[in-house]
Length: 420
Image (cartoon, rainbow, N blue to C red):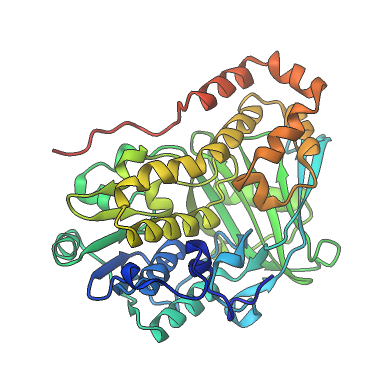
């Protein structure tokens, strides 16, 4: 992997690794980025490279910010930091193993599995990654204003004062709160996780994800041979009555250390696309949404960090050409194949068919974990070479219906009219 100290990933994204032509400079223009997690950090970095006078607002202080979600990053090559433990990159995990079980009890059986290499994947201490990136931005001229919340009145003022406002506040976005349209999102996943200590030497440096015939999954992401992040998540309409009890049960049945309740984090993972693409750019107020605020994440896994960073780099590359009007369609077009595959595969869980999901994992095993999501042509090609699996999919009404909706772009986002 190319050293990030030698080559800036956003400049490479632009196709200009050695610099920007003079007519691409936006010196003298102002950009405000609201939300200092991964999408916001990427947006601030890219806009600063373009010459914008960039200000980044983060409501928490980076030194004390507790972030314990999204710690498995499958493409860190897009992050302009040295991949060191000091910067939060603690385990260059070589592969993600996915196991599919018939249930979540002692009677369960393994229905199938797949091993997915991870060329650019790391298990991270994400709070350290964000802290290091924010410090790097501050050192390179971005005005990083941490521990600063933005009210609705502040938002209106910033929109009036800035040439460009990037909403990277998550889901629901601050823009939605201001507009009173927070119901325009759909398709969420609730997850609970914690860092635990114990003996993970039999797994490390690999990572493991388990599907256990409920609409969700659990995981163990080792950071060292004796420390790991473990967690479990459920679709919003299939939540257990007691999150912590269900988490403890998952740890016990999978022989993972059970965390203390005070160490657990509960958070929401978007499952995108959950926002009408036309809502990600508001030219009248010069507002553009990136990351979770734009409603993008993988529909099957909820994975969204590489998607968030790409959305920010795409946004900035279009801003460089004064072509933000094409951002909604370009973003949607880039994500469409990923959405289709994830939407179809998720149907196996919704229909209670771990056998189908297990066979799918076996079919696509060996493809890089990032490529499965971001360039799923290989995955579709593997499925086409499994006539027996295709026949079973063709006789499953749920899967056929999902396939039809996937290829006619009938997604889950709510078509909420824009406020007048």
